[in-house]
Amino acid sequence: MASRLIHQATDAAPDLLPGTGRHRTMLFPRRRTTPRTARVFVADTLTEWGETSRLDDMRLCTSELVTNAVLHGAPVGRLVLVRVESLDAELRIEVHDSGENRPTQRVPEESSVNGRGLLIVAATADHWGVKERTGPGKCIWAAFDRAKNGAAPLPPHTTGPQGDTS
Image (cartoon, rainbow, N blue to C red; front, side, top):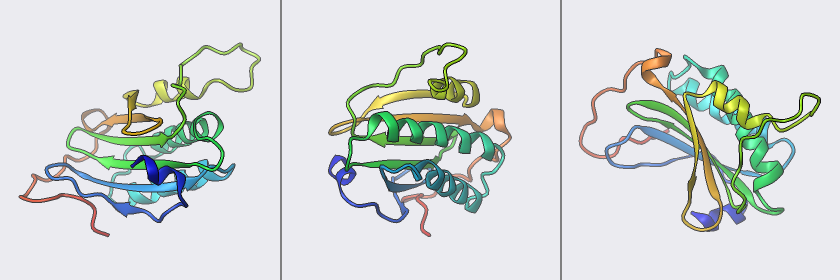
């Protein structure tokens, strides 16, 4: 997956993993407009799946995480990967970049105009974190518990993959 972060952006593609919910992934260029287009991708995907109970919260977290990736994570010429997952217990937004620096939540000065992104994610999502990736970079994620947000449980799994096929 790491090598995909240095090539041109691709259209949304379903990923199929046995025994899981559905998910969709899209690569975005490191541009000023990327947070907006990533929000649209996440909102369109979740709306298509009927997962709209906390859509505004998920859009906000997407915007904050992608903005951090564009400003601090993805080196020039690299891409940002956004993944939307609908799992049994939660809805999850992941943002992958190839930068080596791990984000840290900080408390900015009251007059500061930036530095609040992870505070917003922590206050909005039910869980968030950072995980390592294969290859360079990291994955920052925000999760929204189904039990807390009123989302309908996923139907029971059948045999075989449960990925998005659109």
